[in-house]
Image (cartoon, rainbow, N blue to C red):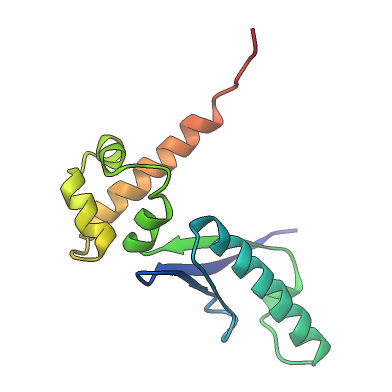
Length: 139
């Protein structure tokens, strides 16, 4: 059975993270901590689906079968999501984008061009692939 991808948009509002699902109008979540936002929106999605099924409300066919969530961040949200994990200097090393520029993106002072946003995304995907190749052994 093919899994459908369900887009979840995550943004940083200055104090909190907010998430919403375009295919489920009204399904939203907030969190003050980065690690909470994905869990909160998952809970909101499943509660929304359960409620819709119980009330016989219309529900997109995607939610009647297997689906997986595809999290999409705006640049401000992404950089703030990883703020406690990566410094701006670390992002510079990963992406080749100067850390002052990274700070401008994280604060929302400047918006990256599409090419710069893709550079950040590709660097994180590459890091993820590299991390998946690592095994830790004990001596």
